[in-house]
Image (tube, rainbow, N blue to C red; front, side, top):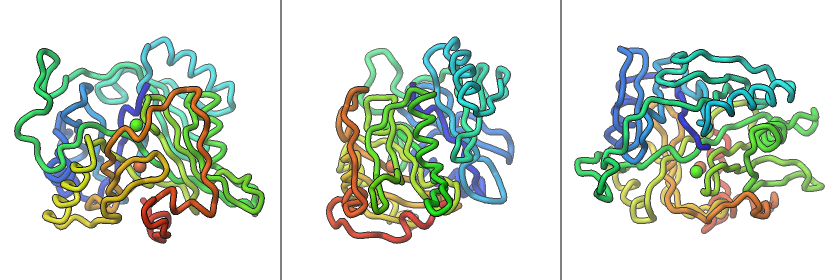
Length: 311
Ligand code: CA
Ligand code: FE
């Protein structure tokens, strides 16, 4: 149904908490001592969409998608097993505040969960005659966790393409739709990045090629371009390390700003619908020559660290 949460590793829990609450405006919904904190955006209704885990390295611990009905977990368990990927049942509550779940390792090497039930908290504006936005939001006041982009190993010389393997798995086994892709190589037959969706937004999951598995970024939704600009102001005021100032993406058409949390995990604030996705939408393909136009539409310039630096 949607990206349910991302479990992040952070080097300094208090510094991370300050970032995700005071800069991004997320709300703390639970805390396990000095170990981990659970947060949600004001416009989300489930208990959390982000877990911050105190760790000795930065990066992503796992990602989790929510399915609509518990019975679907049995179908996915069978299908994932049939695809040749090891899948385990996870008891109720083992994934905090969630019902039973299933856990498996993506071809990219990342751990992923599917679950159907998570404790309900509700939107900050409630569900009866709601105001359009709540008072007292801090920082960017992000609405919700919009998507996650992972990195996976691609080495054509050794016949390795874990991006393509992961995309095939998401499409064929998890019923995701492919929205956009980048095809590279002399014959333009090497899939080096992809944007996939279950919702009607241009992507809920993305994956790109790198020398090793990792996290490229997690992205939070804002209404529109002026919110992206204001967020960049907030980043500057708070002396947050900005990666890319407000821009338009060619791929997905979103407006965007990239920056880093105190552990070096890349964040994005992403605004606008981009376009409405539907399961039968033709797949959009970007060529290697126009890759950077796809990433940063206005300049089309390569920003080396953007693909080379990640956690
Ligand atoms: Ca999305
Ligand atoms: Fe993104």
